[in-house]
Length: 217
Image 1: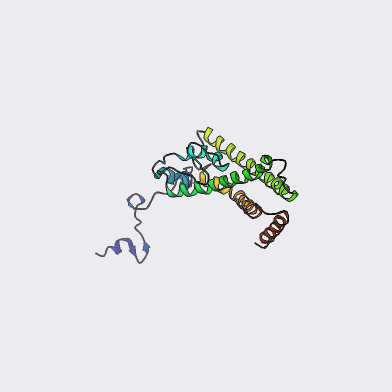
Image 2: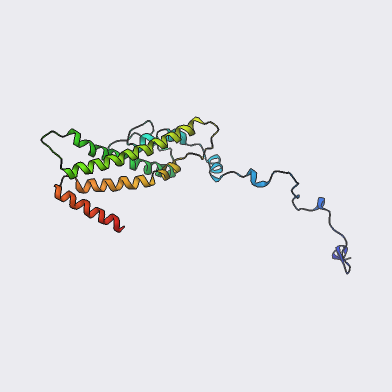
């Protein structure tokens, strides 16, 4: 006998297979937990699957405020213009740390430029243009310090909360927070390099040309 005749006839389907004997997944019951409630963020899944990092990301986050100000710390022994990192860190973390170290080095060089006015003797006067330039840079550096203070407060809160999610504060998020400020530090460094060691009229001309280039871009 044809097996199809057991299930179908000219009158239609008269033999329906039982759900208990089928391979179909069971239907969700009313009031049960939906499958989406058990989903985890991608960062949490990746952090659990990858091997532990040495030093850990929390240990690196603890020293990030020092790195952003160009100050040496336990995990970031900064030198003049270089940064030595542990060889156990994965390449993506190393790339993030270098992006965090760049504004710190720029900040330190700009801070030394601003402080030269205080170290000069009375005979070595700085022109009004140079004084205005240093005053403007000093104001921008104060804004950078306020940004670093805010990041430090977020990191301290994250480290103090033992129940906090591992993806709440990360090195990647810190690099995103400082992206705009890093561009400002780069621009000020270019201005200082162009105007350092030239006369007053040349300084004013260089500043005018740089402003024109910035407006064009």
